[in-house]
Length: 143
Image (cartoon, rainbow, N blue to C red; front, side, top):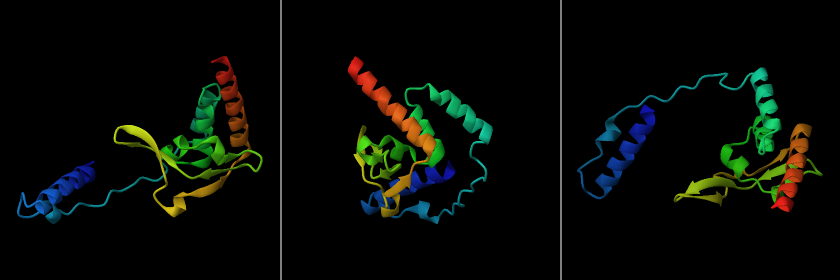
């Protein structure tokens, strides 16, 4: 939290220094320690089972299955389209992210080339996606 506040303040002061509103950016003089991350912050096996059980009947259950099995980022998951998924070859292409840009959600390309990738789909993901597609077709025909 302190690091992010420092970054915002430093960027604001840097902008002010560039515009010559202030003589120099004094935030550059502050030493901030790198954040430390804890190991084993993931879910336990029993927690994963509980999420999968709860997601089974949820309208977006396939999203949770993909998140748990593949570890995709939130924007990558939300950016998936049916054209990115090949259920026959059991793989998907991460080719875009869904991000909030200027207050609206927009598809954007991944930040790095390594983020653009093909991911093999385990059997539970294929099963969840097939069920999701059937549910979508049913929803659209009822609308």
